[in-house]
Length: 131
Image (tube, rainbow, N blue to C red; front, side, top):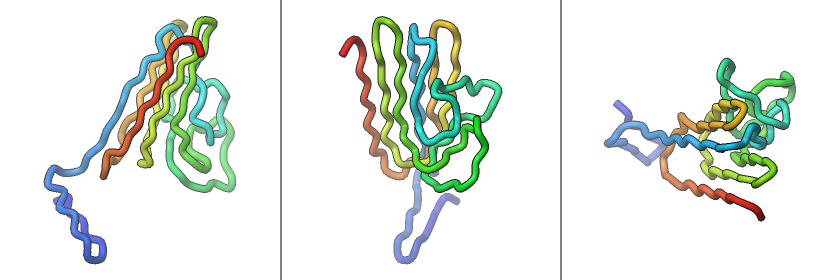
């Protein structure tokens, strides 16, 4: 059912389609910044009641302001900052994905999900504390 053929290559996908996701909690951080290439605010808004931020490489000529859809590239890098520390999270995966952001006054939760994975090549880099 999941098989694909392209020219002479045949992919039987014996285990069906694959995907990967990750949840990141920025504890004691009110705001998170990053994932550029979106026509939205610098501080990422909560996507609880809206569409998630889309990460996808494409070229958009005209776009709406305040829209979480991708514009050009997908840069999956986020920062959170408070008086005690700066935290960064980088998720290197070329597949299309979506990022949900849930903000409250004390914490920010970020979920990256629904990514197609054909060959898992993911690097996650985080830095905690003072530089």
